Amino acid sequence: MKKLLAFSAATLFLMAGAAHAERYVMVTHTQGTDPFWPVVEKGAKDAAKALGVELEYNFPPSGDMADMAKLIESATATNPDGLIVSLPDAAALGGAIKAAVAAGIPVITINSGLESSKELGALMHVGQPEALAGEAAGARAKAEGATKPLCLNQEAFNTALVARCEGYFKAMGLPLNMIDVSNDAAQIKTRTAAALQADPSIDSLLATGPHVCEAAAAAVEEVGAKVHLSCFDMTPGVIKAIKDGKVAFTIDQQQRLQGYLPVVVLHLYNTNAGMLPGANIPSGPGFVDAKNAAAVEEQAGVNR
Image (tube, one colour):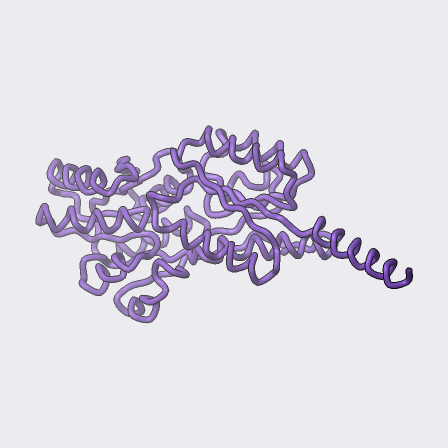
């Protein structure tokens, strides 16, 4: 009987532990079209494995914000221990996020939406200050001789990418000149080449994503233009373009941290009576150029 009672007690203990295993859901606004996001996903899964917690990763294949809002609503209905969401469009996603917060689910925003995170009730934001990153890029491009720029934005709805472009032109002391190049590599190349051909006085480009950067570099080469090209984020192709002298620099926002750190923060919050950093966590920006490209080359597309 004593052995039976001991076995039963142990079984109940294990069942209770399993029932209270932490489970987090991450929802981002894109994945398949952008090499940036698999690195974020990897960071989140690495953190979950290290902490022994469960992680579910979702994104809308359509890229539509209404579909993303539905994913957030569906995640909320499962009552996870925390939600991690990118916030490219606060108007479209705000209702779903507020509903999650109202249901008592701790939310951390990542990547985009820094300016809206707090007002929607999120605990904090992990990502780079996009306007400041854009200003840093613009100040450097201007110092390197850029005078007539164009910003290439692959997600016109994304407030973070718009902020990058606005910051870039603010540092230049010029009015915003931005075009929507779409998220399709072929379209990016075609639209960039068309813009350069339509206005040969354009002497500088800012690409707000790594696949945009690669396609823009190909467009510049195809047109035969002499253009200062700077970019955001890293892939092996971007690093090669820097080493080949086709790209001046790229801004590194260390996206693995945007996946990894929110899982750690939520774990601490849930297991340590609301423990929380005293401020948002900036994951960037930092410059990668010809001087340090070789040093980070193996990390491009893997952890950065």
